[in-house]
Image (cartoon, rainbow, N blue to C red; front, top):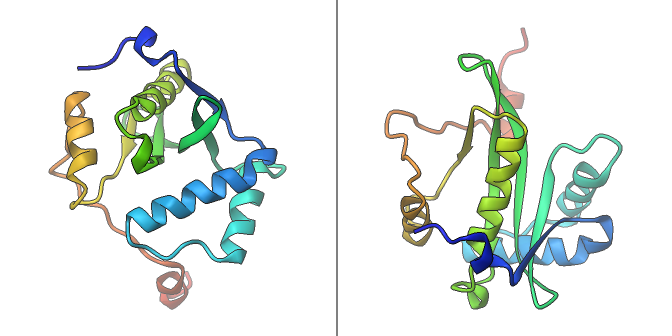
Length: 167
């Protein structure tokens, strides 16, 4: 069941500002730890800040705060659907600290970015979930999200791209 806005009034969502950089990067580290991945190195941290707060931002990020403490974040950016001829809002990350789960910060973040998608006239909102993350899968199921069984996510890493022949 989706919470009403009044159920979420204790969660403040705000755009990440450059002054929030350390808090933002700490939350990204917490997600890496949760997913058993390497934390971003110093060069990656610099790129995250440049690409989020530079002259031409490549993504937007939002913090969820409860009682003034940052407990989660979301990163979004737009892609484009040639078949819908509309933008797609892509949710790259949504994460809430484990100790803050159950306080509705996740649903507040999700509904906030979904509202951005609506306001921008997006034809859809997409995201990916790790196959082992049943907590996230259950969260999206409760929201009525559809698992796209017919689509598979493929990836080329930067190293893979350098091995491809040039046109």
